[in-house]
Image (cartoon, rainbow, N blue to C red; front, top):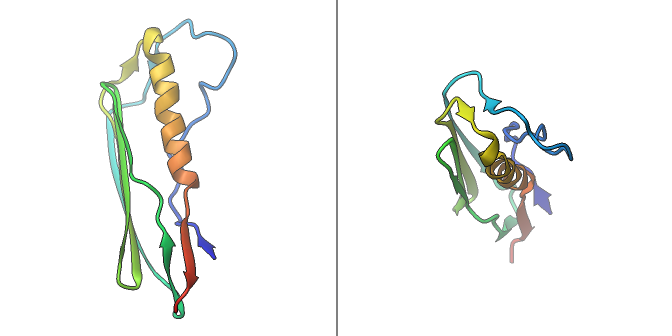
Length: 116
C-alpha cells in the first residue's frame, strides 16, 4: 500500500524549454514557507519504506524535506526559501536542477505493509 502526502506544489516547469534563456529569472519577492504534515498510519499497517530526505541549497533558493516514522505516525516537513529576487541567465541550469529536485520530492511516497 502506498500513501501520498497532501504536500502542495512548489515545483515549476517554466524552465523546461529547449530555447536558451536570454533574460534573468525574476521572482516576485523573497519567500520562506514551511509545511509540516502528520499522517496516522491505518490500523494493521506499518511503514515499509520512507522517501529519502531532499536537500538543495543554492545562492538563490533552498529546499529541504524530511519524512520520519514515529510509532503509528508519519511526519513530513519541508522548507522552501527564495533568497535572491533575480537569478542570472548563467544560473538557469542550477535553477532547473533545483526545481527538478523539488518535483522529485513531491512525487515521493511512503510505502506501507501489513503489520505482522
